[in-house]
Amino acid sequence: MTSLRSFLDSLGFLTRLAPARVMAEDEMNRCMIHMPLVGAVLGAAVTLPFALGFFSSSPWVQAWLMVLLSVYLTRGLHFDGLADVCDAVTTHADPGRFWTVIKDSRSGPFGVIGLVMVIGGQIILFHEMVMAGSYLAIAWTFILGRTACVCLGYSVRHLTRPGLGKLFIDGATLGVALTATGITFLAGIFLAGPITTLAAIVFATAALLPLHRLAGHVGGANGDFLGCAVLLGELAAGLGFVFLQ
Image (cartoon, rainbow, N blue to C red; front, top):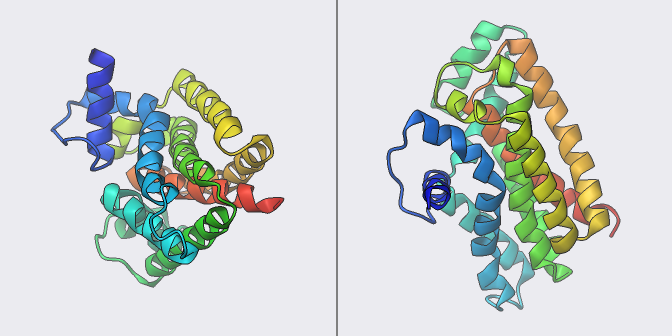
């Protein structure tokens, strides 16, 4: 019962798919272990209406609506992190300036460019997957995205800065990261196929390495880095699918 409560709390904090409530610090630490399952529930919610036939004659519309639904159901949480990192990365030669920019709630031109590239990329990749009838593979993208977040969190545990992100990153232990990776790998084989799974993991690793290096260069990582990792992982899953098509 405690595990179910913890999962529902994580689902409510990270999405609109469960009631949100104020969580204690130790409860936020436990969010990381639930990330793959949160991704699975979110992926099912995003893809199910279209797998059942909504707008079946318009694959571009389906792809766009799935991305729109993803943004709505996550409250745009990860997209905000992506925009902040894209704005701040242009100042990474000056770590102090980096953290000033990343905490600014306003989006600059590079943040907007990052959002356009990622959202556009998701629409294009989801369209390719819709054309192949692979709604299960689309659902898996949300699982890989959240596991990418866990893995990045584990790799930057020694660099965390005070704040909400630290509460999540502290929960990304080696055991949690390995468990999330194993679950995601097995789910990928079933939902997307072994070749797609392997290719997507390679792409995700390649995408996370620069983010990890950036954290080392600026001397820290926060929740914006985690949000960015989620979206990079989702894109990697889509690229893994189309890579050998």
